[in-house]
Image (cartoon, rainbow, N blue to C red; front, top):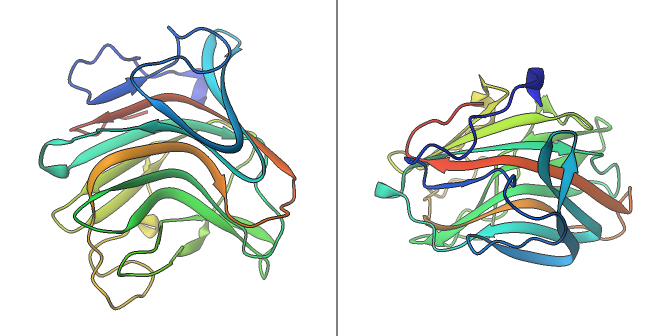
Length: 234
């Protein structure tokens, strides 16, 4: 975690959702405030030094998500934050595509992925990008060479969901990353206008879409998840 610092926890009553795992028992997830979405994957609360965190484990091209259902933000505008450490990102097959955060809802059939990326074989590296799959704007990932993934290190990701311009903005470790933003007409070059859904489901975890990946399994850790009407900070 950045500089050994932690967020203030879940004491802020203005938050729309918060989970720091500190009050959950170790082992399989046991919370009435969020659910689980898995296929060839598992979630488990683990102790790391002084903190409890959520381990996300998948096999092959499986998925494992903490799922927040019935989410509602006033005016469909909100900010999110999550701390993430990924053991390793895929290096095969070519163009392997992965997701860490996925948001869906009414008003648009888009599947919006504020945090995700892709293995790019021409550059022999994996890179972050804002992406969507399906819906009127089709399938786009829009990875950026300026945003290489970082393995085996805690990072703080923040995003803004702004319906005013159908904008998704991103910060990494408190630094704005405008090249990873999407908006009404900036979403991978597709000429069809991009429209944000009325967000009602937020999923955080891991999904890889191509079979036979390298490595054959993935582990990552999540902590300090928060959604709120204002930027939450790291």
